[in-house]
Length: 127
Length: 78
Image 1 (tube, each protein chain N blue to C red):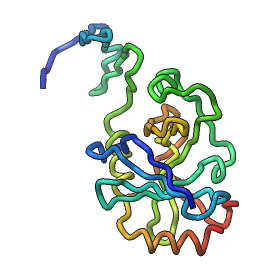
Image 2 (image 1 turned 135 degrees about the vertical axis):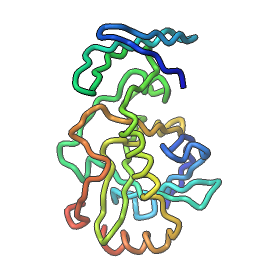
Image 3 (image 1 turned 30 degrees about the vertical axis):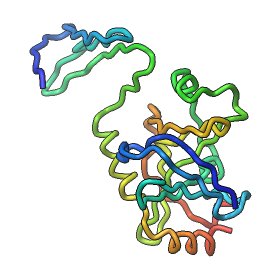
Image 4 (image 1 turned 90 degrees about the vertical axis):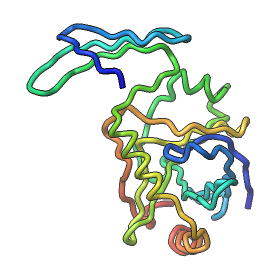
């Protein structure tokens, strides 16, 4: 189990900027846990590409610059997952874009209206 | 909050250190205003209600009982 320190801000939690991304379910799992260092707040994160087949978006140049990205090899994308009423929902509209080399992330907002902040999915479909 | 009256095609300039933001009332019709917005790089322009929706979704997604959720995903997800 690996723990990666990350700096960045989750929308609505702007007071906090220090997080740890935990590989809590094994490297092969699409799920991670993002925990705030300064508050008892954690988020279930998921690799959206393993949950939604045709999920795609362009990382805008501003975001590339703000994250200091040099190439696709340093990029990870994770979306926040909510569990409610025995159902899992994934926020496809505002993914976290992570520069894994620098340990920083930005929760961006996609302009694509096709992606919702709350998309239900079934765990059994997740590989 | 500064409140300004504008007619169709009238604009507003917000001057900033990194460049100006220009907002134009492109269309005004039946209680709705269509706005055109030009902004320098580095500005993400989104509807206010979308930001509120994301804040609410994030807050509802925040969990305090990690053990419970780890068990849940561990049981179902692997």
